[in-house]
Every structure is written in C-alpha cells, then in structure tokens.
Image 1 (tube, rainbow, N blue to C red):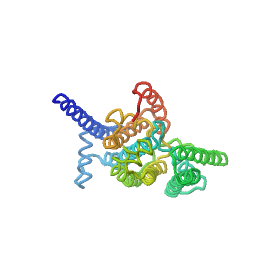
Image 2 (image 1 turned 135 degrees about the vertical axis):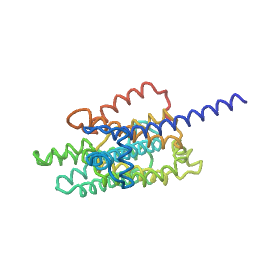
Image 3 (image 1 turned 90 degrees about the vertical axis):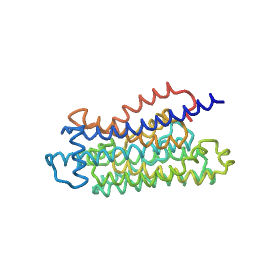
Image 4 (image 1 turned 180 degrees about the vertical axis):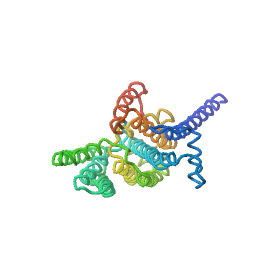
Length: 348
C-alpha cells in the first residue's frame, strides 16, 4: 500500500515538474526572441528597454533600440505566441472531440474559408482591415455551412463522421474558389500578393494585429478551459458520454465555435500556417498525458513556443525572410512521422 502511494506521489511530482519546465522554457524562448534579428540586443539591454518603456522613464539607450524592441519585435513575438497557442489549443480540442489523431484546426473548413475571404479581399483591392474582416467572416461562414450540412445529412443527429465529411466538402469547395481567384487575378500585382499571403507570414504584423489574435484567443480559450473536464468525457464513445449525462451536441457546438474563432483570427491576420494544430497536441500529450486538465494548458504553451521558434528561424535564417507556413510544413511533416513511428499505440 505504501509502495502504491509512493508511486502515485512520484507520478504527480513528475507531472508538476514537467509543467514547470514547460512554463520556464516558454518564458526563456520569449526573452531570447527579443534578442534575435538583424539589430543585436542583449538580455541586459532588453530588460532596461522594457523597464524604461513600461514605466515611461528617461531613456538611457539609443532610440533605435526602443523602436526595434517595442514597435517591431514586441508585436511580432506577441502575435506569434498567441497564434501558435490558438492553433495548438484548437487542434487539441478537435482531436479530443473527433477522437482522431489526424484532425487539425482546418478540418471543418475554417482555414480554407478564411483564405478565400482574404484572397477575395486582395482581388477587390480592399485595405488590410477590410481583408482581415472578410477573411474572418468567411472562416466562420465556412464552418457554419459545414455544421448545417452535417445536421441536414444526419437528420439532426450530428454524427462525427458526417461532420468530418461535410468539412472536407466545404474545404474542397473553398480551395477551388481560391484557385479560381488566383486564375483571374492580375499576374503582375494581385497574384503575387495572394500567393505570398497564402504562404503565411508575420512580417508585416503590428500591435493592432497582435491584439486581435490575443483577444480572440482569450475569448476562445476560456470556455475550453472551463469545460476541459468534459472534453475528457467527450473523448469516449458518444453513447458512453451521453450515459454519463453529457450533452454531446451542445458541447460539440461550443468546441467548434471556440476553435473556429481562434483559427479564423489567426488565418485572417497571418495567413495559412499549417501543422501547428496537428503536431503540437501530439507532442503535448507525450509530455503531460491525455487528461485535458493538463493537456490544454500544455498545448497553449508548447504551441506558442513552437511557432515563436519557427518565426525566429524564418526571420533570421537568411537575407530574405522565409514564409512561415512553408517552414512549419517542412519541420512539422517529418516530426509528425517521427512521432507516429515512436509513440506507443493508443493516442488518448
């Protein structure tokens, strides 16, 4: 009995230590990210700039340093972390809800819809705010259309398989619309703009964009955090979940709505960034286990740290910045293969 208690206590201590390590690494990556770039800044200078900038004290360093840290790197780091956290949390919630390890945040067409909205906005020569609003609205509309079709096809039962198939249908449809827009776009101005946007990037991000991603992330993550114990039950068979008193239909709508909001906000601001919502939840599950009480916070921290690392690589690996979506695919696909080959069977 004592041995069993000791084992349980050791397991709890190990999980607690892992959580502390994840938080420490996330903070460390954020701080290091401020020092990476064409203009070198030390950690000591960083703390001086942040302290004097936050409290509006007299500046003791060159003005260019304050501009680099507060106007260029701070919004980008803020946005990259919030975007990675949003995609990872959405992916974890979807994988639990659909009980499928291959599910990602764009499974119901949110990314394709948002990408179509942005492409249409660029074709119509709208301003950046107009493009972002149109992208966000089409992302929400695509998922709403997916859900309505699934409800119609499954005669109001809303089965998981019908929902996934409806999502694939809507995703294919909006992808075809994007191809059509690229075909009719001006090849010398609009087409390059659309193509570059679809690759995903945080190069032109500003503080307002970062606020948009962060605010929508907060709106989406709070309900998921409050309901994360129910997500554990939702990972079971639907019949079992209903037998335990869970309103599966209502919870599914909440998960879809929160995940769609977060995904659409990221795509509307930063373009298409793949593989984060697919790979990070698996890695987080390896670290803290399948319990959503630990998994969801871990996915948020690991997702934010991962995308921030990739963004640091994108802006420092060469003279020209590499599109973020390209790098996440190059890194994510081999890493996912590694996870599948080395993780034991039984992903939840």
